[in-house]
Length: 144
Image (tube, rainbow, N blue to C red; front, side):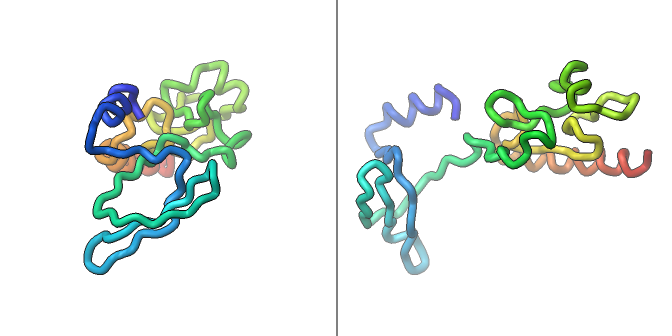
């Protein structure tokens, strides 16, 4: 999440942040009525009457399982296209004479789109657009 957005949320009087908190349940009929959460510092579970929840996803790429398979940046996001320097490609044993396509990872034919990609703008619309663009690159790879 950008520092700008974090600051706006922290400065907002009508938003309550619950750090170190894990949602355990969302309850209601036809709309959200209550939320159950666990405070991971204290181990305490609480239920509160709440009608709106904002979830921040995508801040952590959860790509540890890809380490050693495709090149990742220092934060664990997948490096693609122009972010794959000649040195990175050499270490990854890039086997092709061409450079990777825009959304292609360090493994030929493996593409990354959306929040998991290093340098992405972390917006749903961009992720959807990148996914659509990746399809055209996949067709190019299949035609090679």
